[in-house]
Image (tube, rainbow, N blue to C red):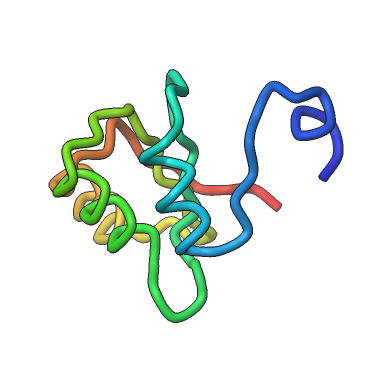
Length: 86
């Protein structure tokens, strides 16, 4: 992790469980959420934290330009979605 992660301006979660816990405990202004998270995906995480009452705005990032995942993210409560450039 270079740049923002080293600056302390962002928090990084390495897996679904850690991301879920950190998201519910945090008081961040926004969450950038990657779609692929191993066995579970970012949509499942988003739906899970929304069901627990977390309203932190989220932007779902995905590696392809699939509109289907982006629209599903918006329906699940994401503020926006975008293609992650790597």
